[in-house]
Length: 314
Ligand SMILES: Cc1cc2nc3c(=O)[nH]c(=O)nc-3n(C[C@H](O)[C@H](O)[C@H](O)COP(=O)(O)OP(=O)(O)OC[C@H]3O[C@@H](n4cnc5c(N)ncnc54)[C@H](O)[C@@H]3O)c2cc1C
Image 1 (cartoon, protein in one colour):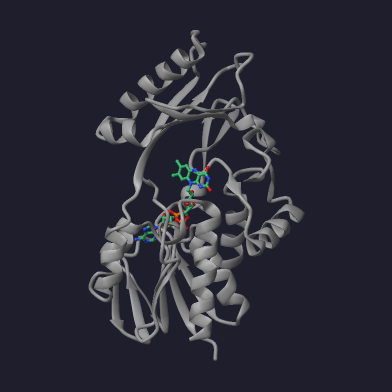
Image 2 (cartoon, helix red, strand yellow):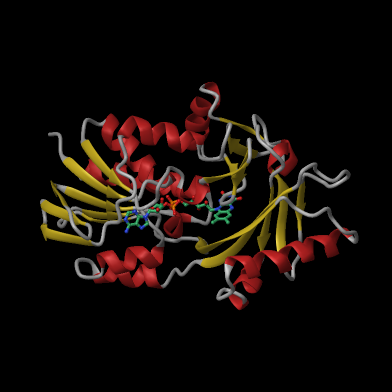
């Protein structure tokens, strides 16, 4: 029998769950507080005069190892929504022409309701409601929570305190990310550099990814330790020391950037998840996301799929 299911979070895990449930004939409503698709796989657009600058400022690439994800990414590849990125390694893939592209296609198909922050789960088992500051959605036979652990814990603690305790036991590390554009890219810089710290962990040229267009776009990621130590900096104040650390790494000055902006991912990466998914069959409440399976795109996708399978089996 077809059920109406509410899903909080339209990142890769929520979309993966939605895809499986819709394929099985259920009606799904997806909500996301973001203004556009992607979650932590989103792509940031900046514009200066007539030039657009596109930064994959969250996940940089993803691995594709599990046979179920292999066949999903095969489908994305055939639709032009993903491709290999050899500069990051032999098994690295990215969304094309932007990291968020495969998710954007799913969001469009499923009609995600963006800019909608769910603040509460109310009602009774089998007739759940999802509430925002001024709206109520539902009733839903089942609810899926597909958001980072810290945010999930707050939403579910009244209904499934044991799940909330597990979420609190899996905190995320933060990541300051700085986006840099030059009028013309300086020569002789490797497209990908994995840095051992202490400030930076990763430097990459978005233009080296397949299918990219737009102006110069470099992404610098700080280490979790540096980010945690400087988490209270303003965005302006975080960008400058990261840019200086890049110059120090190259042992040469770089040209003046035309764009230098930092973004703080407060809940960037989790540790290895152990539960895979959480599902209370009696309540009809499920939880998925990378924090349950591993700090990777592939793990988040699998967590969503496996939660949907558990729900269908019940
Ligand atoms: C800087 C950075 C670098 C990374 N690098 C890599 C990498 O190289 N390779 C890799 O595999 N992985 C990487 N990751 C991890 C990867 O991006 C994540 O594991 C994956 O995207 C998590 O997907 P998710 O669906 O679990 O969560 P998310 O992508 O966080 O999706 C959750 C969604 O829920 C929404 N949301 C949250 N709260 C609410 C609410 N109350 N109401 C409505 N919506 C809500 C959010 O807006 C978001 O869109 C990186 C992550 C970051 C931040």
